[in-house]
Length: 629
Image 1 (cartoon, rainbow, N blue to C red):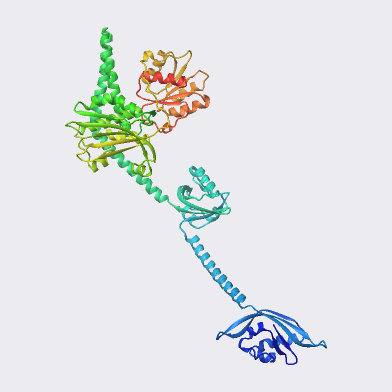
Image 2 (tube, helix red, strand yellow):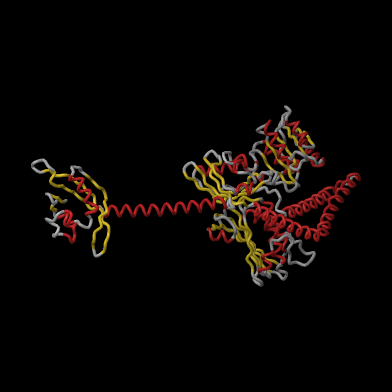
């Protein structure tokens, strides 16, 4: 602070103000104000005169030119001027309190400069984002929690054909492809719940009524969802075209192979049909002649030929990977023991057979008949690779596959039961291993093999959620392992089917509805049921069967073919359950109808029996179902 006093306003100040004066101190002490600050008197003179006239003045952050540290710079001060009176109450001087505010002012200047720079960058960034918004070929949008479009970029017009004012303010559901409405609503709900969507795909409806595929990524801020979508219709169509071409190529390859195989299949089926029809003709003749002693021989011959025809059909269906499986919990050791004698007879005395069973083998869920067929195929292939004799080893084991081992085998990590068949034969080269599971691929001479064996094994195991792997070297034999998932449940003991005459009898009044469009099958099933004491009601198609089901007649079981005309067996069963919720259903199927049967995921009380079946098997299954087993 300082005081200017007297007629010439003599300059008096304290030590703190001396620092403000700098080089002017101490010479300024006792000098008139106008001389001490002669360099800034033109700026401060008017102020002093106003104060000496009785006016108190204050100034904030006033810049004062000063020489400091060898260079000129502005220094800022805040001043407070107050007039001073003498004993006569006349103004004789002034008092000034001053505070240097240079640091404060420079800080504010730096802040304003930073704000200006930031504002310039925001303006630049906003312009850039605006260019992106306007020029992006991706769909950009802002949508609220209610699914209402709040902002859209011009790409929507280019991709979907709508003008923006046709979209903004409306719900996205108004423009979703009908089949994708539920999917899209679920995705929007996830986004609202702060679950960002990445690569979410759906279809929007173009203004011309055709679909457009979009792949979305989203983020959420507050109540708004921000998203960008990439138009992927071309990629989807390209991928679908490739898939169709691949399917057509595979089908062409398969048809070519089937064409090459037709002669052999026709030969086999003609032999089998001859065995069936010839046996039945002789059976009819002998009965007419009264020579009933030979009847069993003809019956057995016909049944044997029919069973071989059924096995060939199953093999062809397995090749297409479309057979209906009947999985059951089993312990593979028991199945191998049951097959051992048959395998020994099949491979012949020149081949030694060793069986190594793992103790405490886990249970697996698999179709026992198909697994038996697969094991027999593997042993026959092993036998054919050892023309001069050798050794076949069948081995079972429990395997726990970690992530690395499972990835190597193209399986999920977990517990598996393995069934491996190894031989001491010629082995396989890598290029043969790569093709071994291809349908109709065989290294055997023409006429010695169809190439369906390993493809059937592969198809069956993959349908059972397992895997097949080949380990082989030329000259060192082969090892083929089936990996089957562990089933956490008890196995089912093998039950021997009774003879038809010994099959369980019906209770009083038990009634079965038989629906099949094949008259012969319908007749046979009905006669078997009536022989066992059941009341059998026949229907030739789903419509006729539905009329019976909608009546008040007693029904304990519905036996229906799956491949019925117009209304298939599953549709009939579903309609039946609407009027008879507890009705038990047995589907009988003769070909690839697993898709109709929901790929094996049947409702409670629904079961499957695959054609051809024995009458004993049919009678036992019907009784089990009616009794609630």
